[in-house]
Length: 135
Image 1: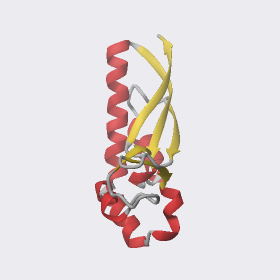
Image 2: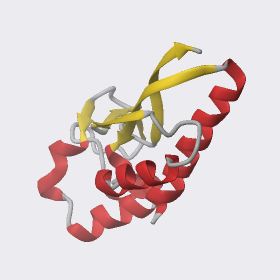
Image 3: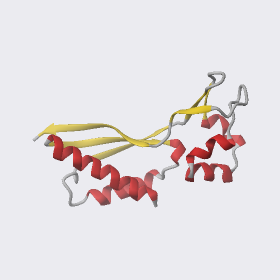
Image 4: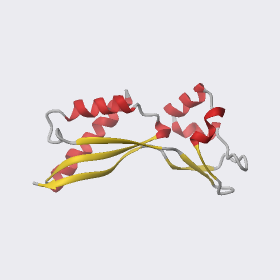
C-alpha cells in the first residue's frame, strides 16, 4: 500500500516543478532503492492512475532498481545485499522491507564483522532525472 503514497508524492513533486518552471515534462526516471522492496508493478500502476486528469498526465515513467551497497566504517570494505542472499531468511528480508533501519541488526561486515556500516546506495526512492520541453 505504501507504493500508492510514494506514487502520490512523485506526482505532486512533478506538478510542483511544472508550476515553478512552466515547462512540459515528457518523462521522468524514478530510482527505486532495493532496500525498500518497492513493488515495481504496483508503483507503476499507481503512477498511471494518479496522473490521469492532471497536468502531468502525459509523463512517461521509467522505473529503475538500484542495488543496495554497504560500506564498513571500520575497515572500509564494501559489499552488496545480493552477496548475502543465502544468509538472510524470508523473515529477516521482510523485517528489512518494513523497517530498513533494522538492517544493522541483521547484517555485519563480511570482512571484519562490524555492524558499523553505512548504506552507500540502494535506499529510498527518488526522481533521478526528467526530460522537459519548453511550452
